[in-house]
Length: 175
Image 1 (spheres, helix red, strand yellow):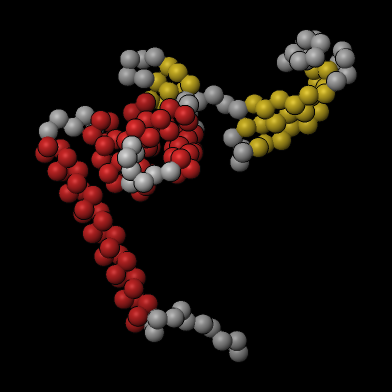
Image 2 (image 1 turned 180 degrees about the vertical axis):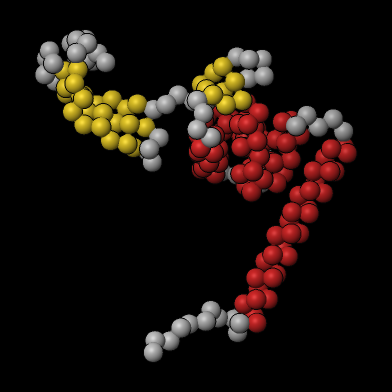
């Protein structure tokens, strides 16, 4: 590590701390030549391997721009897009590998996007999965309806269980 002030190559680490939930390391350094102190932040580089074999760094902004196109004209704000991109990056980094195929990045986008906006999800999925006919759309819409019906049934079961219990959670009394 070179000192940013005098360009001397002999610098000593004074303190190291993990930041961003262990995603990066912050190091406080001191230059042996000029004595000045400076801070560095080290973050592992996550690379995306494209279908063509080309490798490029993972960029959260590329996730946002791709999803933004799918959300065009939909009631989705910028903050929601940033949160989605953050969730995607966390999911991709959780894999623990330095290189990830672009296909897996796309899969990591589909789940959170489906929760965010179903129309945007269909738009993104149609491009990502290369829908070639109306049948592909119909199948995906049927899958969405089926999963929505399953969630509605789970919610109804939860409500029925609460009603059977008197509508309020049971409390244990002290002896």
